[in-house]
Image (cartoon, rainbow, N blue to C red):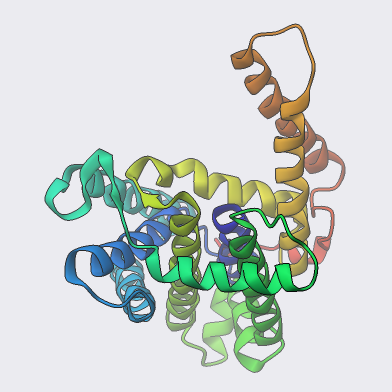
Length: 298
């Protein structure tokens, strides 16, 4: 859920409310995760102090990407962001002395382990004796994700959020009213970078190590699949869409068919793809979206 639940939430802010096609979320996650891991493992920084520092590093990267590329049209901006994401992944793969290369970086979770054990103790105190090892992380991710969704949804009701909608629907009209559309797009990208770094932390804690192959473009594309399923401009649709998509993907693992494991795996994605195609054909606004929210900037 860390990568595939928070990830669509960041994309919703960019795509659903600002109208910018950001295909670089995997890069924000990778920078957040790697920054945290390198600070803790190589430089002895406290795990808890590494989190805000990593967020700042990710925001700086988002601004570096956004300053030259946000002036491009939507399709060219999408190309620029996916290229930036791949550049980050390939850098992590080849900078062996810094990132560990293909072997990755690990050994940063000791402080989290103590927190996880404390949460397990609390759960056991209320009567659940066999607590799965990853359940505390699952619980914390859900709490953080819901708080972030609530905060973002409230922000959309502010004058700042209404300007984002205006930029999405008609950027020229927003400029004519005296709004700096470029600045608002940059702010949206910076907030998305913050959320990406947070998702990267949780993803790293779930895996217990950070490797480049976990930040392939499919991470971003799966977020877009959730947006299609849940609907644009609806944060709660993102949360429910994530649950539905990953329940489908994981539930289909239990298909009992006379096929090889590889073919069953391919069939799982074909079924989910067919569901998304049918949804786009008969309900293009998504399960929880509205047709009037489907206006995107150019």
